[in-house]
Image (cartoon, rainbow, N blue to C red; front, side):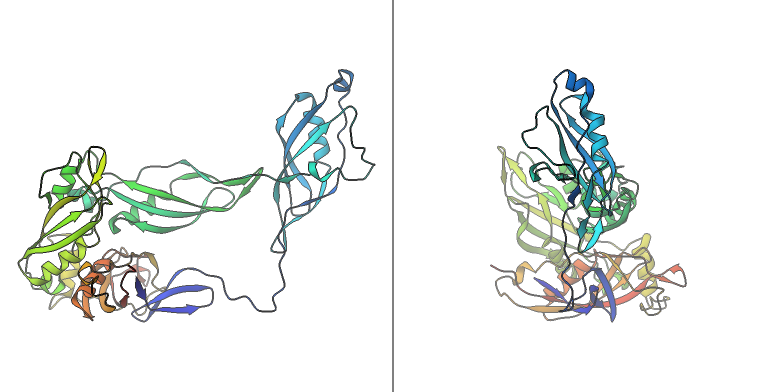
Length: 459
């Protein structure tokens, strides 16, 4: 279990990042002890008009039943009615004409009158078994009741573009989104629930804004709702063997019929001191991908410097795969990985490393931003496998940069109760994504700090 330092603010919860409060999502404020009890419930029929029996149907001695969808507004008035099912179309208009005259005690949502979608039968019987006096209500068995709710659904969805940053690594990817929809089917808000890699997040959010939806419904009533949907990324044409090789991974023993497929492959953190000193290096590790697709039995086999080895181990601890297959069954497979730490020659890491190097322009703190920092996606650190047996609790203080695109970059361990906790925390932070920081209306990079606590996993 991983713990962050939280601070409560009525209506929000979040965590403190370098003294800056980051709202994570909405939360209800405490309810006063003497608050009035709010009632919720469906509309109740209060005035009923029988249908006029069609002359032609009576002459032909026809009977029937029409099921009508109806929209009842917050005043209890039927504002729309449609035939959902009919035994005989000759009864349809008479059924709709009757329903439009019905009145209801409005449905309530926590004491507030609200529209409702109802469905109910209109019966046509030549000799009704139950006589209903004028102005009286029919038996409750034929009262309209709430229509079945239908979930919102995607009408059209454009595939996301694969991020150029990950082209060389050929990783598949997925970002799980929770999308809030209005009753008009338009997006009212989107939240990232999970991402296999930070590089997929911005594109997933961008492309989801182009999707179109059919809103949730209760009969004729369109409803605001939430739905979950994945944005999936594919490196076109990449086979499993190519994906493994592109990430420095190889099979140690005999290859299974179906190789494991890399899924969550977070790159090791480049040790900042080594990066700023211009020092490159390598590290190698052996591990087993079990039948669940989880990296286990991890062992560092070589490294050009201890920091490179520690960074690789922390990354592999969180790797997951789609399992290898043999004879139609999932099987474990032994793998090895060689990771090269090469100085970036372009892009954000090069720019930020130059800013942090002696004589560079530096990266300022997050003070004085136009608005508070806001988290888009943050994954929790993986508890270090090397410490599982000891069941140790721990803490790490991490400094990192939130770049002008919102990506967390160049994490550095300031302090840790054990080195493994520091590298695990830094690896997780390297995948965090924020709303781009702004100062004076311009996107800027800022430097922040955060403490992260670790509790051993339950056995």
